Length: 74
Length: 383
Image 1 (tube, rainbow over the protein chains, first blue to last red):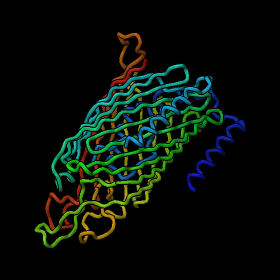
Image 2 (cartoon, rainbow over the protein chains, first blue to last red):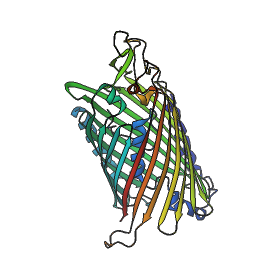
Image 3 (tube, each protein chain N blue to C red):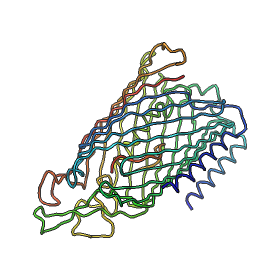
Image 4 (spheres, rainbow over the protein chains, first blue to last red):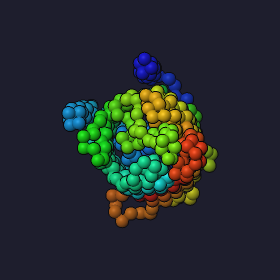
């Protein structure tokens, strides 16, 4: 049920994308987002390793932008 | 196992072929071509895990990018669990991943397959992700699904072989809010079904007939688990070219664990060649409903756990890192390259997991806690 709602919301958001909302941050104002230090994941190989450490040592999991693989902690 | 993996491999090849058949469209931005070689090391709580990781990513035919990762964990464990009920051991886990990304207009598709193998556990995971830019490219919506087929084995018991079926559903949203602020949201539901406990770990219970006052029996976990995690993060570009970022993650699952994570970080370029980073992470969780450090008797309840990762605990992590941009390479095909060193210091304090190696009356031993050092040293090259 919950997942169905998420898919519906995603579909609504995608449909809204076709209706042409005026971007309030203009393309020429976005140079900061092109700076490498602003990248959400500048070093994927190092981030995925640290996420693996968290998943092996903590009960929580998910929403970490990594998935799959074993644990090495049996 | 082969019955499960072979149909998946065919499905993955079909999906990859479908991606390759997408009409060629205006290229937006695929990740850069790069290669990374990393050495990782974790030391803490009597456990040392180290090894290499290699990641190579290459674009082709303008709209496609392929990446491959090879990763090794070499584990040497004399953790408190192992010292309590077993003998120290060493093992190696090897993991390989292959991913294909395709770009079609403002939509990026990705399929990937990961195989992880160690002497008592095999994991296969297939993933499909897509992301779409919306609202004048200020918003990026992403959706993902993974399916995993694991096989749990047990050293010294050739007959022991149990499956685990895993599924993950992901939703992500990133939003440019102002010329200096980006917000992100991630939600993930994970369901597991199968043999979810550790075949070696035991729980302890009060036993007046034992000289120590307690005895051990194997763990018993439920055969299903569903978890939900939601994360909200912000990245703020500061006026003097630096970035401050923060994240909060909420977690809950059907085993009764509730978790909270707060993370703060700061990235600061220094001159033309250095980028310095620092951060702090706080994590806190409640225990699983069926966790206890000491059960009142043998078979005290249907499900039994004494895994400290399912106990109530808090952890803190301090991080520092430095990236140094190397000068011109003697190989002309390398555009730029960096050397990187990251160090993390972690502290774990358990509220209801006792250090029975220290002795004391059953249930009154000192609470357990430990420090861990995490090192990541790597070289990156863009070509």
